[in-house]
Length: 357
Ligand code: IPM
Ligand code: MG
Image: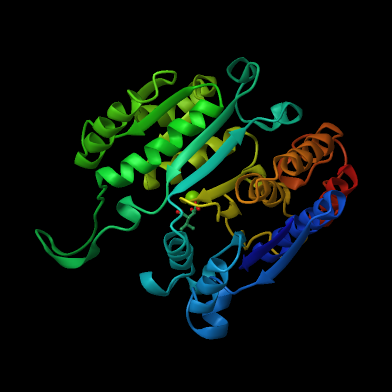
């Protein structure tokens, strides 16, 4: 198959890990006889520096004209003082929204080989866990009305959360369909004891649940969920939640697997064009030192093959290569723990994955 893949490498760590992922995708294409064409576009801080805006129109148009998008990371301290609309992060929200990517899949799976890298005790980990967080990505407080005004105590800032029934229904259906393909357990997480948006969310999810009688549906308050994730992560299979709660809970869940450097994500809309990115950020502290863990980006490439290009054998092949190198004891600095020897560099780890393909 021929595919057009837009590359948004972004800032700091972004380019290094996207290069690793592209190397793995190219080798996979060679093995299976596909032809992938990669076109880079600017996004984030580097776009601000080069053309004065974090999300140039050319980038949006390029992504819209591609089959799918592979993204690294955006942001860094040099752009922290810019106003809300000019920040690199705004570009990430902008591209998600421009491409209509309302479903964000964030798997958090414990690799058997990395059990000792998890901060959880053996007794809690048990036979391991494999959670899929389905995060709503283009609504809620991230996109609500915001601003500054005169309040009871003087000048104040405000951000508002709004969710329509339509937005809840489409993410709800995506989550129920995801649950149907896995172990048919879905937990919806909200704050319905306090928030109106959460009450509408819960009511809508309950209505959808009737359409999926095979799915064992539960709901949970977000504060309890944050606690349950570390108390007993094995109780979860698929989780569905709002943009903000999903942002927070997915970082928490990632840490339970040992390192945020391992976890990929897929952002999807109604069609097949998706955006794939590691859930970690641009990590200025380790960027440019060949120290990063490329696995999250490599696995994002696998998700791209599976969800946008429909190439599930090829995606399995990459995921198996990652299993193989981890089983063989290959470790970058984030997951080496107390293991003997020095950690692999980012390029060494990439090379091992390429050899395992
Ligand atoms: C993420 C990130 C982004 C988000 C930021 C960088 C805008 O934290 O993808 O989880 O909050 O969605
Ligand atoms: Mg986040």
